[in-house]
Length: 257
Image (tube, rainbow, N blue to C red; front, side, top):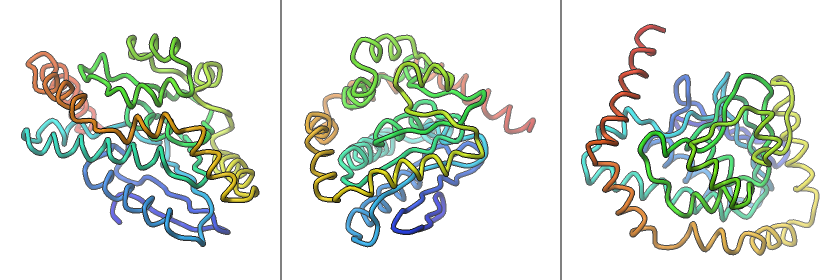
């Protein structure tokens, strides 16, 4: 695997996102994450999972530089892949904890939302769904994930504003469950994972699936209608212009760093 690292510690799998500085999600990374979760799901020797990033990034979200350059067929295929991954991680039956070690906007936030609990590092970090200002229409299933934790009113306000939260705001609104010093992030997330892992596994898993029944139905449903609306906007001149401005800025930062 090129974009993630996996270690096993006493029946707990630790998945570390490891793709460049910002862990931006491209086709390869989404595929590797989907495959590893499928394997872990079927492995009776693994009872729980933690997902974390490196340095100051959990994940900066989708790799806009790569995805911007996809043709229509590639773009449709990628968004299908991403929404299939969202369905897979939402319906994952074992304990799944996000150790949010740094920035986690957009797609990074989506991964965290699909987890059972989120521990975030203190610091000057951001988390939230900021797709609307970028010109991307958020599929209903991802809004459902957001509102599952925030409630519909706060999720609606936050989504339509493209609001990004600092760690303290994220804790207050219920987007994360715990804030810790950056050096304690893995310890705190492991503590949460093992608390869940200590329960009788089938009882815990079935309870999780029952609680998430509507959410799983939403993320697993046929997404083609939402995707068609989203892709129409993705190719619109206004969204392409916004994306081009963002990408030019990202590339300048990369060149200057």
